[in-house]
Length: 118
Image 1 (tube, helix red, strand yellow):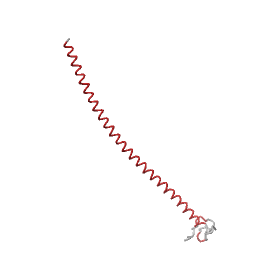
Image 2 (cartoon, one colour):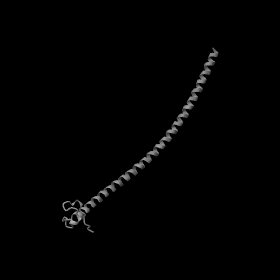
Image 3 (cartoon, helix red, strand yellow):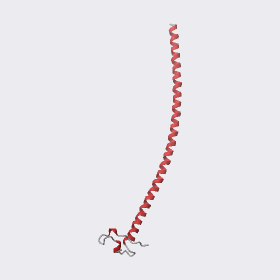
């Protein structure tokens, strides 16, 4: 009977040591996981900061592009308006009649070369 109790005590002692080893290993793994989590959180914060900067830069360039497109449209409209005035109307709005030597065919005015008003 004593022998069985000693054997049971040794088994319990061994189980306790194994449980303590597993607990230490689990604590070490938990510490590593927490360190890795902290590292990933820091990386995420850095990437979010970089993303914010990139989005701000995109907004800046998008606004600059929009402004440039508006200026281009205005310039094209002004050029078209100015071109229309100088090629097709006189100073008082009278239509300019092209001279015969500037048309390849008197009936077809599509090849008309506008005179320079400079």
